[in-house]
Length: 269
Image (cartoon, rainbow, N blue to C red):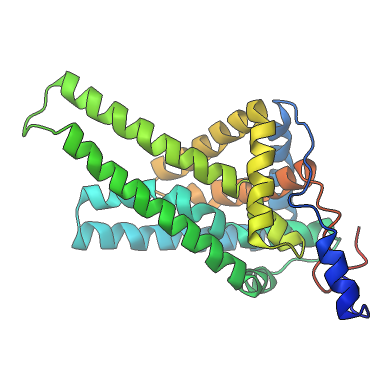
Protein backbone atom coordinates (compact mmCIF):
# COMPACT_ATOMS: atom_id res chain seq x y z
CA UNK A 1 0.00 0.00 0.00
CA UNK A 2 1.33 3.41 -0.93
CA UNK A 3 2.20 5.43 2.19
CA UNK A 4 1.35 8.70 0.40
CA UNK A 5 -2.10 7.56 -0.66
CA UNK A 6 -5.14 9.25 0.84
CA UNK A 7 -7.51 7.30 3.12
CA UNK A 8 -10.10 7.16 0.33
CA UNK A 9 -7.52 5.71 -2.08
CA UNK A 10 -6.46 3.14 0.51
CA UNK A 11 -10.08 2.14 1.12
CA UNK A 12 -10.64 1.77 -2.62
CA UNK A 13 -7.51 -0.38 -2.92
CA UNK A 14 -8.67 -2.65 -0.10
CA UNK A 15 -12.14 -3.00 -1.62
CA UNK A 16 -10.62 -4.05 -4.96
CA UNK A 17 -8.73 -6.97 -3.42
CA UNK A 18 -10.17 -10.45 -4.09
CA UNK A 19 -11.60 -12.51 -1.24
CA UNK A 20 -8.80 -15.05 -1.64
CA UNK A 21 -5.50 -15.15 -3.49
CA UNK A 22 -5.43 -17.36 -6.60
CA UNK A 23 -3.32 -20.50 -6.55
CA UNK A 24 -1.24 -22.42 -9.06
CA UNK A 25 -1.75 -26.04 -10.03
CA UNK A 26 0.99 -28.26 -8.61
CA UNK A 27 2.50 -31.54 -9.70
CA UNK A 28 2.42 -34.32 -7.12
CA UNK A 29 6.22 -34.20 -6.97
CA UNK A 30 6.34 -30.50 -6.03
CA UNK A 31 6.82 -31.14 -2.27
CA UNK A 32 10.10 -32.91 -2.99
CA UNK A 33 11.37 -29.70 -4.57
CA UNK A 34 10.25 -27.71 -1.52
CA UNK A 35 12.22 -30.03 0.76
CA UNK A 36 15.30 -29.52 -1.39
CA UNK A 37 14.90 -25.73 -1.28
CA UNK A 38 14.30 -25.86 2.47
CA UNK A 39 17.53 -27.79 2.95
CA UNK A 40 19.37 -25.18 0.91
CA UNK A 41 18.03 -22.48 3.25
CA UNK A 42 19.35 -24.40 6.25
CA UNK A 43 22.78 -24.63 4.62
CA UNK A 44 22.73 -20.89 3.84
CA UNK A 45 21.68 -19.92 7.38
CA UNK A 46 22.62 -22.88 9.61
CA UNK A 47 23.24 -20.91 12.78
CA UNK A 48 19.91 -19.08 12.66
CA UNK A 49 17.82 -22.08 11.61
CA UNK A 50 19.37 -24.70 13.87
CA UNK A 51 19.52 -22.35 16.87
CA UNK A 52 15.77 -21.84 16.71
CA UNK A 53 15.33 -25.57 16.11
CA UNK A 54 17.34 -26.24 19.27
CA UNK A 55 15.10 -23.84 21.21
CA UNK A 56 12.06 -25.82 20.09
CA UNK A 57 13.75 -29.06 21.19
CA UNK A 58 14.36 -27.62 24.66
CA UNK A 59 10.70 -26.60 24.82
CA UNK A 60 9.72 -30.14 23.81
CA UNK A 61 11.80 -31.60 26.64
CA UNK A 62 10.26 -29.16 29.10
CA UNK A 63 6.72 -30.10 28.06
CA UNK A 64 7.57 -33.80 28.23
CA UNK A 65 9.00 -33.38 31.74
CA UNK A 66 5.95 -31.48 32.97
CA UNK A 67 3.60 -34.03 31.41
CA UNK A 68 5.37 -36.96 33.06
CA UNK A 69 6.03 -35.24 36.40
CA UNK A 70 2.55 -33.80 36.89
CA UNK A 71 0.46 -35.97 34.63
CA UNK A 72 0.99 -39.32 32.98
CA UNK A 73 1.83 -40.94 29.67
CA UNK A 74 -1.62 -40.13 28.33
CA UNK A 75 -0.97 -36.42 28.91
CA UNK A 76 2.34 -36.70 27.06
CA UNK A 77 0.67 -38.44 24.12
CA UNK A 78 -2.00 -35.72 24.08
CA UNK A 79 0.69 -33.04 23.93
CA UNK A 80 2.41 -34.84 21.08
CA UNK A 81 -0.91 -35.12 19.26
CA UNK A 82 -1.51 -31.43 19.83
CA UNK A 83 1.76 -30.64 18.04
CA UNK A 84 -0.15 -30.42 14.77
CA UNK A 85 -2.13 -27.51 16.23
CA UNK A 86 0.82 -25.38 17.37
CA UNK A 87 3.37 -26.37 14.73
CA UNK A 88 2.32 -23.70 12.19
CA UNK A 89 2.71 -20.92 14.77
CA UNK A 90 6.16 -22.14 15.79
CA UNK A 91 7.36 -22.00 12.18
CA UNK A 92 6.93 -18.23 11.70
CA UNK A 93 10.60 -17.53 12.42
CA UNK A 94 11.66 -19.98 9.72
CA UNK A 95 9.45 -18.19 7.19
CA UNK A 96 11.17 -14.90 7.96
CA UNK A 97 14.64 -16.45 7.64
CA UNK A 98 13.70 -17.80 4.20
CA UNK A 99 12.23 -14.44 3.22
CA UNK A 100 15.42 -12.61 4.22
CA UNK A 101 17.51 -15.09 2.22
CA UNK A 102 15.20 -14.66 -0.75
CA UNK A 103 15.75 -10.89 -0.65
CA UNK A 104 19.53 -11.29 -0.51
CA UNK A 105 19.75 -10.16 3.10
CA UNK A 106 21.56 -11.75 6.03
CA UNK A 107 18.92 -13.23 8.35
CA UNK A 108 19.22 -13.03 12.11
CA UNK A 109 17.32 -14.95 14.75
CA UNK A 110 16.48 -11.68 16.48
CA UNK A 111 14.87 -10.29 13.33
CA UNK A 112 12.96 -13.53 12.78
CA UNK A 113 11.57 -13.52 16.31
CA UNK A 114 10.83 -9.81 16.03
CA UNK A 115 8.82 -10.36 12.85
CA UNK A 116 6.91 -13.13 14.59
CA UNK A 117 6.04 -10.70 17.37
CA UNK A 118 5.08 -7.99 14.88
CA UNK A 119 2.32 -10.23 13.58
CA UNK A 120 1.10 -11.13 17.06
CA UNK A 121 -2.42 -9.84 16.31
CA UNK A 122 -2.99 -12.23 13.43
CA UNK A 123 -1.23 -14.96 15.39
CA UNK A 124 -3.67 -14.53 18.26
CA UNK A 125 -6.63 -14.80 15.90
CA UNK A 126 -5.14 -17.95 14.43
CA UNK A 127 -4.30 -19.32 17.89
CA UNK A 128 -7.87 -18.79 19.11
CA UNK A 129 -9.17 -20.63 16.06
CA UNK A 130 -6.79 -23.51 16.70
CA UNK A 131 -7.74 -23.56 20.38
CA UNK A 132 -11.41 -23.94 19.48
CA UNK A 133 -10.56 -26.76 17.08
CA UNK A 134 -8.36 -28.41 19.72
CA UNK A 135 -11.12 -28.24 22.33
CA UNK A 136 -13.64 -29.75 19.93
CA UNK A 137 -11.11 -32.43 19.05
CA UNK A 138 -10.51 -33.18 22.74
CA UNK A 139 -14.27 -33.44 23.28
CA UNK A 140 -14.59 -35.76 20.31
CA UNK A 141 -11.77 -37.89 21.69
CA UNK A 142 -13.54 -38.17 25.05
CA UNK A 143 -16.75 -39.17 23.29
CA UNK A 144 -14.84 -42.04 21.73
CA UNK A 145 -14.50 -43.49 25.23
CA UNK A 146 -18.26 -43.17 25.72
CA UNK A 147 -19.30 -44.93 22.51
CA UNK A 148 -16.39 -47.38 22.47
CA UNK A 149 -15.69 -48.13 26.16
CA UNK A 150 -12.54 -50.04 27.03
CA UNK A 151 -12.41 -52.91 29.51
CA UNK A 152 -9.68 -53.07 32.11
CA UNK A 153 -7.95 -55.67 29.94
CA UNK A 154 -9.23 -55.10 26.41
CA UNK A 155 -8.83 -57.81 23.80
CA UNK A 156 -7.16 -57.20 20.47
CA UNK A 157 -10.43 -56.59 18.58
CA UNK A 158 -11.64 -54.02 21.11
CA UNK A 159 -8.28 -52.27 21.11
CA UNK A 160 -8.20 -52.18 17.30
CA UNK A 161 -11.70 -50.69 17.13
CA UNK A 162 -10.91 -48.04 19.72
CA UNK A 163 -7.63 -47.04 18.09
CA UNK A 164 -9.18 -47.11 14.62
CA UNK A 165 -12.03 -44.78 15.55
CA UNK A 166 -9.73 -42.50 17.54
CA UNK A 167 -7.27 -42.28 14.67
CA UNK A 168 -10.05 -41.52 12.19
CA UNK A 169 -11.46 -38.72 14.36
CA UNK A 170 -8.03 -37.24 14.99
CA UNK A 171 -7.14 -37.43 11.31
CA UNK A 172 -10.24 -35.46 10.33
CA UNK A 173 -9.36 -32.63 12.71
CA UNK A 174 -5.69 -32.72 11.68
CA UNK A 175 -6.70 -32.52 8.01
CA UNK A 176 -8.81 -29.44 8.71
CA UNK A 177 -5.95 -27.77 10.59
CA UNK A 178 -3.61 -28.55 7.72
CA UNK A 179 -6.01 -27.00 5.20
CA UNK A 180 -6.28 -23.71 7.09
CA UNK A 181 -2.59 -23.45 8.02
CA UNK A 182 -0.72 -24.79 4.98
CA UNK A 183 -0.26 -21.36 3.38
CA UNK A 184 -2.02 -18.85 5.64
CA UNK A 185 0.81 -17.90 8.01
CA UNK A 186 3.46 -17.53 5.27
CA UNK A 187 1.04 -15.18 3.50
CA UNK A 188 0.66 -13.13 6.69
CA UNK A 189 4.45 -12.83 6.95
CA UNK A 190 4.78 -11.90 3.27
CA UNK A 191 1.80 -9.60 2.66
CA UNK A 192 -0.55 -7.17 4.38
CA UNK A 193 -3.45 -9.61 4.33
CA UNK A 194 -5.93 -10.33 7.10
CA UNK A 195 -6.16 -13.77 8.67
CA UNK A 196 -9.56 -14.59 7.14
CA UNK A 197 -8.23 -13.97 3.63
CA UNK A 198 -5.11 -16.02 4.35
CA UNK A 199 -7.10 -18.94 5.77
CA UNK A 200 -9.56 -19.00 2.85
CA UNK A 201 -6.62 -18.80 0.43
CA UNK A 202 -4.91 -21.72 2.14
CA UNK A 203 -8.05 -23.87 2.20
CA UNK A 204 -8.72 -23.22 -1.48
CA UNK A 205 -5.14 -24.02 -2.51
CA UNK A 206 -5.12 -27.31 -0.61
CA UNK A 207 -8.42 -28.46 -2.11
CA UNK A 208 -7.24 -27.62 -5.63
CA UNK A 209 -3.96 -29.53 -5.25
CA UNK A 210 -4.94 -32.71 -3.41
CA UNK A 211 -2.24 -35.06 -4.84
CA UNK A 212 0.59 -32.65 -4.04
CA UNK A 213 -0.85 -31.88 -0.61
CA UNK A 214 -1.13 -35.59 0.20
CA UNK A 215 2.56 -36.03 -0.58
CA UNK A 216 3.34 -32.91 1.45
CA UNK A 217 1.43 -34.20 4.47
CA UNK A 218 3.25 -37.52 4.34
CA UNK A 219 6.61 -35.74 4.24
CA UNK A 220 5.65 -33.56 7.22
CA UNK A 221 4.44 -36.56 9.24
CA UNK A 222 7.63 -38.47 8.40
CA UNK A 223 9.83 -35.53 9.42
CA UNK A 224 8.03 -35.05 12.74
CA UNK A 225 8.04 -38.80 13.41
CA UNK A 226 11.81 -38.95 12.87
CA UNK A 227 12.23 -36.05 15.26
CA UNK A 228 10.12 -37.68 17.96
CA UNK A 229 11.69 -41.14 17.54
CA UNK A 230 15.14 -39.63 18.11
CA UNK A 231 14.05 -38.44 21.57
CA UNK A 232 13.18 -35.01 20.13
CA UNK A 233 16.79 -34.36 19.08
CA UNK A 234 15.97 -34.79 15.41
CA UNK A 235 13.42 -31.99 15.65
CA UNK A 236 16.33 -29.53 15.73
CA UNK A 237 16.79 -30.34 12.03
CA UNK A 238 13.41 -31.59 10.82
CA UNK A 239 11.43 -28.61 12.12
CA UNK A 240 13.64 -26.03 10.37
CA UNK A 241 13.54 -28.18 7.23
CA UNK A 242 9.74 -28.29 7.16
CA UNK A 243 9.49 -24.61 8.13
CA UNK A 244 11.72 -23.42 5.30
CA UNK A 245 10.11 -25.84 2.84
CA UNK A 246 6.69 -24.46 3.78
CA UNK A 247 7.84 -20.99 2.76
CA UNK A 248 8.86 -22.25 -0.66
CA UNK A 249 5.58 -24.14 -0.92
CA UNK A 250 3.75 -20.86 -0.38
CA UNK A 251 5.93 -19.02 -2.90
CA UNK A 252 5.28 -21.63 -5.59
CA UNK A 253 1.57 -22.12 -4.88
CA UNK A 254 0.01 -18.77 -3.94
CA UNK A 255 -0.14 -15.67 -6.14
CA UNK A 256 -0.45 -12.95 -3.50
CA UNK A 257 0.87 -10.14 -5.70
CA UNK A 258 -2.41 -8.18 -5.39
CA UNK A 259 -1.72 -7.55 -1.69
CA UNK A 260 0.84 -4.92 -0.63
CA UNK A 261 4.02 -5.95 1.09
CA UNK A 262 4.89 -4.97 4.63
CA UNK A 263 6.88 -1.75 5.22
CA UNK A 264 10.49 -2.22 4.21
CA UNK A 265 9.66 -4.63 1.40
CA UNK A 266 7.51 -2.42 -0.84
CA UNK A 267 10.10 -2.22 -3.62
CA UNK A 268 11.01 -5.90 -3.53
CA UNK A 269 9.73 -8.27 -6.16
